[in-house]
Image (cartoon, rainbow, N blue to C red; front, top):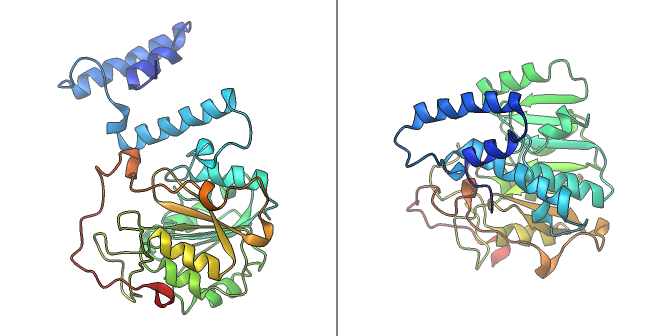
Length: 307
């Protein structure tokens, strides 16, 4: 039987361990006092955003390590350590299958407590650049990496107009390992503007809340990101620009948030392409479409490439 509740997990973990039993019993009693009105003693982990998501990925990781052979579909390797969803596990598996320089750039990183490249910087000693626009969260980011000579932090609003100069000023290598783009709006336009830099792996947020039958992108917006569903680009649009830049889609995470692209000249048979790529739809917090952005009234999407 699958372990689906917090109590079930604790019971498994404390088996044959008096010390753990005592500690877990304290936790269980606290849970009873806190939730009170919950029917019986069962608490669905999926109802708790952070805890449920993290425990889901930990369970998936354990499943992979114990029972599954190597080179499975990439979804089986999803794991969250510092990433919002399963990006940590996907990037580690792609780095195992491909030759990837230990360098990164990520923008839209906020304070650095969560991100696609935080594990690489904090645990695996990669060198790289974090860019954050919000001054308050940037100051937290800057303090976090103040003593890390391998990691640079820059406070800037990334745009198609300044992305080249930001990279040049930070001495970003042209043969970059991983580039992660997540700015909740102009992601497509920034990727389109990047020239002269060829990351092996590119991770970019897509809007899984809009149809993907045809490529759709929000018009370039010089202001802050808008609320609602009118933001970013759908997966079809990102595949269009990927082809134009000689990149191939290899995965989307099971939460339907990020798409992973790999340079075509570095592809091997160990990486899925074409019809074998997992294309996941709206599944925020791994709870299907229960949680989604409010629906926007705007419909003036741009169709890239004149499509």
